[in-house]
Amino acid sequence: MPETPATPPPTPIRLLIVDDHPIVRDGIRGMFTGDPGFEVLGEAEDGARAVALAGTLNPDVILMDLRMPGMDGVAAIKELARAGNAARVLVLTTYDTDRDVLPAVEAGATGYLLKDTGRDELVRAVRTAARGEAVLSPSVATRLLGQVRTPADPLSARELEILHLIAEGGTNREVAARLFISEATVKSHVLHIYTKLGVNDRAAAVAAAFRRGLLTTDGG
Amino acid sequence: MPETPATPPPTPIRLLIVDDHPIVRDGIRGMFTGDPGFEVLGEAEDGARAVALAGTLNPDVILMDLRMPGMDGVAAIKELARAGNAARVLVLTTYDTDRDVLPAVEAGATGYLLKDTGRDELVRAVRTAARGEAVLSPSVATRLLGQVRTPADPLSARELEILHLIAEGGTNREVAARLFISEATVKSHVLHIYTKLGVNDRAAAVAAAFRRGLLTTDGG
DNA sequence: CCGAGAATCCACCGAACGGTGGATACCGCG
DNA sequence: CGCGGTATCCACCGTTCGGTGGATTCTCGG
Image: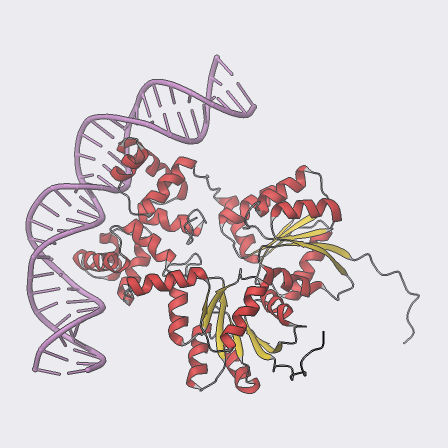
């Protein structure tokens, strides 16, 4: 079957891959290598390296992890915006907790996907992001909808500090002694924590905190 | 400098890659492709597929994720042992909670690594595992040492049930009404939970449960 | 300047918790 | 059969928690 006159091949979408895990970087690169619609410009293992490379290489889309040592993904997204870099940032990460999703979206990410995304879906998502259109994984979309309905108040530094001590089993009295404040003050903070997390007791507060990424299994 | 008479090239270590995330499978494969010391025989996205392929392909080492839909990694390791398959299983996963590490090790895994393992370390680990020697990431080794010192008692089904209700903020009285038992019974279970988790109050119990994988952020 | 939020603090009081020291019944295993 | 673990249940009591309804001071942004 004769073809219509050949049109020039479209300019490939140029990618930068940012992830602290070598396996993941290799996996992502492997998904796009060999596809003429994409060109992998380079890789970075943290946010600072990503910002530097983006300034040099001018990618169309940056596939960005969030939790990385040194400068994390959110900080990098902010820095890219501050520097006026035109690249679209597509977050690709394991975590869909509130603590991860919202800051990234607020920082300016064009998309947010989880690492269980299949190859075809990822390719489509990168194309969508390159056009400047938003792309969200279903669980992230659900979580954002939830946020629109019931916006969560962030805990203050002091409240977070007290939440950690509560999770270790500290009574209000022990927490007070630890922080050199009165037990009444601790109770005030505790009640504020409950209000913000929408719970009524310590156990539920701790659970909600884990689910929101405020407390983590690696103690940090 | 003249070389000694050439010895035949060593037989490559034959690998099977098992992970439900396409990105990760690609990444792992990319790490070994092109290295003449290894041959990637195939890939599987869950435990059942892994067992079937291992029976057909007879790999030397299986790189196995644990949390997968359908048959998970631990069940697959057990099934491989039951079938007398000689392949060494090197667990490669994101999670190092007690709930993940111990069952895998008990099921017969030769090694346990986390996905932040770099390429060189992973290659070394695969070689080690192929020789039948154990290989553990530092955090997993630490956790196993902790288990040897203070073996953890598993929570009974009832205790787990109550733990979930506590994490939702249920008082002992509410939990009792929910389960059609007396408040005294709930308190007995609660105290047993504390003893087994090594804590003294509900909040610490919930935190410990999340850290051990007994409670998870996806409600399951 | 004003208002909101964060941090600090108080008193009071009923509810709930944690600890103690028991008890019985059932099941599975050696 | 005996033992250990699980599930169920009790009474008592001191401690802690959660709720209520305040208060003051400081900082920051509009």
